[in-house]
Image (cartoon, rainbow, N blue to C red; front, side, top):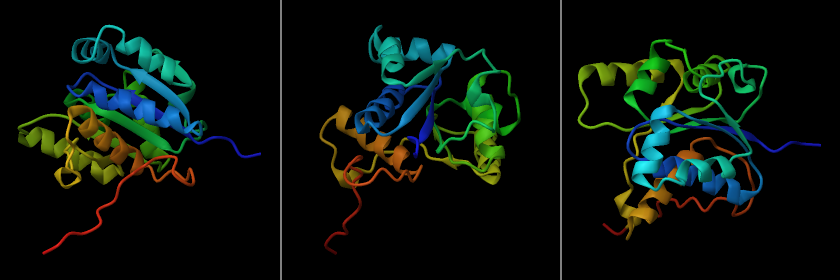
Length: 197
């Protein structure tokens, strides 16, 4: 009997919390993915501010399992807990730096580090602009370790008409980077079809 793929979703305190929530919504909608959620303390505030005060609770309801960010002994902190990967959406510069430089004092950073050491997919939707050299070096560092740095930049050729549509496109792109095999139309990830010259 095969089990549902496990995906860890981290939401950190950067702006763009709606993307993390949308990742959870999309994965839950498939009915085929077991999600494991960590929300940083700063993300609690960002979710409530950018979406509404009920957003953190909604995120937890969507997830299969939720963890306290201070619980560095949780199952997702171990390499023996097999996953299809992890998405941190959005990924703050603080979280990026913690992962890049091994400051693993919280579950979000520790779970991300485990993905790297086990050679699993780690997708970081780094959210900051403009970037200084320290930011760029941290991005280079995690990339050298095997992470995928995917800033939440919209694909304008998809012509999103609304902010929710734009958020959806970014969330689907992040999920697509995990290369999950869910079969059929479980995730409507749109591909570039080319255009007229």
